[in-house]
Amino acid sequence: MHSDHDRTFQLRDGRALGYAEYGAPDGFAVVYAHGGLSCRLDIAAAASVAAQNGIRLIAVDRPGVALSDPKPGRRVADWADDIAELRDQLGLHSLAAMGWSMGGQYALALGYALRPAVTRVAVVTGGLPLTDPGRFAQMPPVDRTFIRMSQRVPWLARQCMGFMGLAARYTPGLFVRLAAGGLPAADGAVVRTERPSFAQVSAEALRHPEGHVEDYLAAVQSWGFAPEDVEVPVDVWGGADDSFLNPSWPAELARRIPNATLNVRSGGHFMAHLHWQEIFEAIQR
Image (cartoon, rainbow, N blue to C red):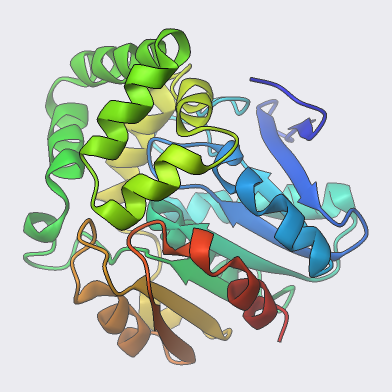
């Protein structure tokens, strides 16, 4: 699924980096990191609110996902190198970073590695380092399954993800009904009503399953930094009804980041879709 919002940029090592731009073209730049098993399109629903708040949303596909070429063996911290090149290409002197779910650690990587250019970070229903003792066992079952599969039988992980992508592309109505039916009520409502649809986002995201295998392998390695190393101001957003994420994680992440503010609001794992206005106001402070 390609649109007028899509862009690609060639990095110095020859890889393509894909991204989409939403909101105000000349506004305050916010680089966005998508969730797991997703892609740049999962922020498109916030485009109109971003425009109203004077925000230029730059949503980037991680390596191997959708428009971006793979980078096998990557770590979370490596993403900052790609974004530093993109920042130079776009002539951005300052920016904020934002990440949803598995994208949260990638947003923190920018806050850690690209300061002082990065002024603030928003982590929306994001996770903690899985290298912490006992943390893996607290992961959602679907993520634990895909992580183990990616480690032990990556070809099967790619096949499963590819099948999900085909289902999203060719039976979108059924795909959305099944996805929404397996979610808590608050999240199911978002999945059923958002545009672009959950099926469109998933179909685009899962065209190249190998990128998501890389994502899961990176998730269980050291990020390359610790939450305690992030010195820029960080807003940690949690959903009061988020039954996907371990309920202790947002507060724990905020506690570990030196200059963090915890914000718990109504909604589930997709709580941002109910609170874009407040999130965008905070990220421009």
